[in-house]
Length: 173
Image 1 (tube, rainbow, N blue to C red):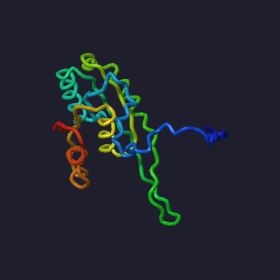
Image 2: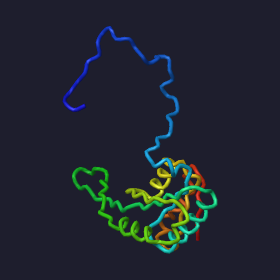
Image 3: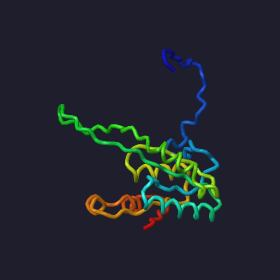
Image 4: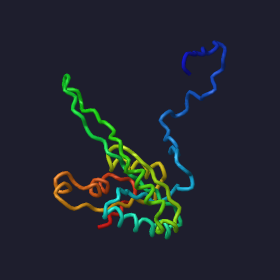
């Protein structure tokens, strides 16, 4: 509370049990729509491979009777900080692509068979897909595979996600 400080009276009884385990496992934080818990997460950027992943994820969500969580990860670019060799700073690049993707998806007939939401995140694609999967307690994450020189040099999103994810990852060619 800004500007206010409340002191505890000296005669106040302690309510919490001091012998309670402070390292107990926290309940998962559900800051999401509960209608989409245990849904299917799919990474989507409008590319051909992500469209194929979306088509598979729709079928998977229909078969499971669950919702579809479509995730678009916005760009974050590292900027170099030249003063004193400080670690790189990441700058969020305005990404209006999410709005365009949302409008395209809202007009798509193929999404009428399943409840869906579009979630925008910024940062590392693998980390954000897994984080959304954790928040929604997703039954799986569906991603499209990438081919090309960039994937060979830096590793593909699908490969990195499959190695580190805590839930099933389905990679669509």
